[in-house]
Length: 148
Picture 1: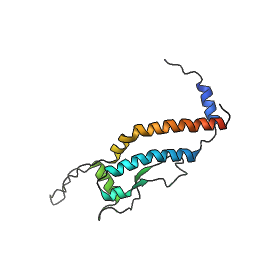
Picture 2: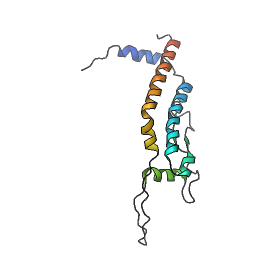
Picture 3: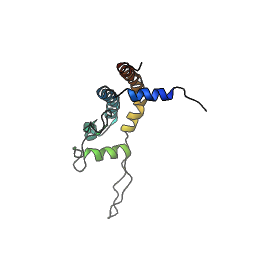
Picture 4: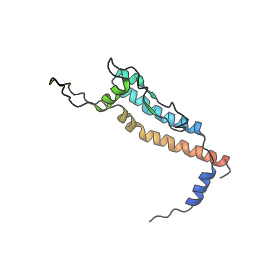
């Protein structure tokens, strides 16, 4: 068993730190999300989906330090019969063969993932970005609150 010394003091100091600067953290998460977004756009083969990819952070009050990315808007234009979000799901995961009531096959659409590979490609870079920069933000806030 490992014993961690000073944990109560650390937790007390973090509680006393007050509010972390949301704007700085939001900017940091946006930089990381931007890496994934750029990569996803370069990997996406469907022009309608590619054009609809973006930052999906409409409710900052609900997610003050989070940046979401994805296909914008449920009604964003896709093909003649599908919206961009629906097309994105088919692009990412593909479809199984479906048989119509008249016995005709709709065929299979093979998956052409773009989001998962973009996340996998960038996760280590984003972790490094967040680790280095969050440490500096926390230290700056600790000094401001005279905790160190």
